[in-house]
Image (cartoon, rainbow, N blue to C red; front, side, top):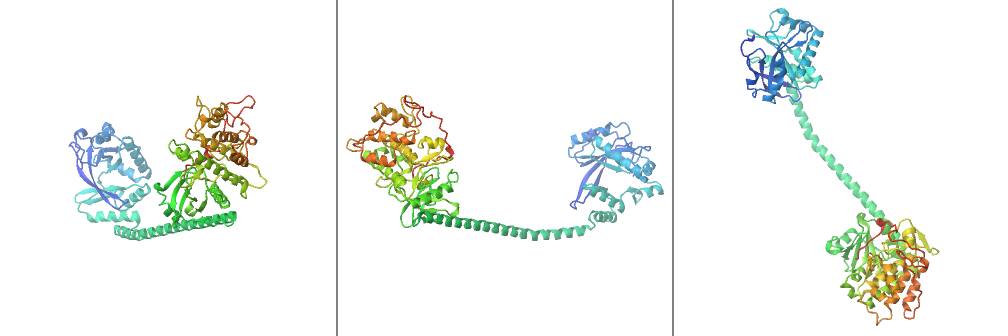
Length: 607
């Protein structure tokens, strides 16, 4: 098996890569290229190879370190040339060879320090030259001493370098400590005993068990996995069912507590209240699953749906929206107040629903929607002639008069506006939405708050700026609403020749200049009615005065309207929020200076 370096030498051989991580054998193709040959590496077809060995590097007998015999350019360029032609091929630097001095290697192999120097220098040099690994192409023995220091087996007339059992164990131990995949060994044909012996040694070192035992253990592990997976899945399913049951139980408990709490509050506040507690399923059925076709409108609290109970009674269902700035406080407030209040000009609350974390209020159904649906529309406004509008004005006054004077409690609504005035079948008005309302004790006439609620354009200056509210707050809102009823104009627009006057200031300017009839809705005719538009305009301007003391009470407003034909009223001053000022008046609040928390202001659409 001696090599002739005068001939071109390139041969194939099969390496068997022993891999202990998964127990599989991988057959690879390898080839040697000898630097001493005259065959250029560029002319060789490298594509069939998976590994190429460059031979040979040698040992320095003095330092026991790996050296390259000159010229060494072939070693330096070997990896780059190979990978240009076959990028997947791995390169190994081969050490020794048939021309090496066997005595030098034998001496090195017998001394541990020499062996370490040789191994360290071999790894370092191979890395510097870009090789992927090392190959020891050992020399062949010629004496008994060589046999004592090296591992060989004899096959026919040829000595072949091989690993004995102890060497295999040593290599496997090293592989495991470095977390490598394995090592290769020459496959010696015809020597099955040697192969099985080494495989047995490797398996013992790898895990202390044979290949058969490994397979057996794998089968046991697979059976265990097959058993554990469904058990684990069943346990997870049971856990999920328990969690769902627990959350559902907590939900039911919470709903029950809320339901009992609201019932108690309604009972305490309303004594013999007729408020009903509805289930979520009842409301779902009544509103056709809250369908779009049943939707009447949507406001700051949430959407409002038309519904029908099993007894045939029509209802309006106001459902709290998740995005609403209002919540439990407004809900409870309305439930408590409506249980105490009963008047023909107040919308009746039939009941409520608090099941499934819902907060729904159920009202009597008002078939003709709200006041703003008519007065701002050029066609629908004709439905409300002056006689019907007077009826609406009187009904609103009676409702507010009841809240402030005749009920057991003094109630400040704090959100009187056109969309909160609902109309029944006979177009009679009813005040709705008491979520913002507040009760006064017997000796209270005024209160303060840091949370400004209501609708911009309807709230008075002392409330918007200082947080003070009283019965005069609702008087101010009524004054704005009265101007809208007689004019059909919105308070969100600007008026006048230069479009720079708000509704209140525009009305005052027209009244002051004697052009008050130009301010009115031109479809209205008061010639046959005792209640006159001009008198109503003057009452409205008195209601929107900046100073609350200058505003009349609801009792005085009611008296004015009853005696309107012979009524002599004082002239109103310039209204609140005016940009202009009279000579005898202190400057009012400039336009835009009012700071209102818009996040807490409701803008409810008609039902």
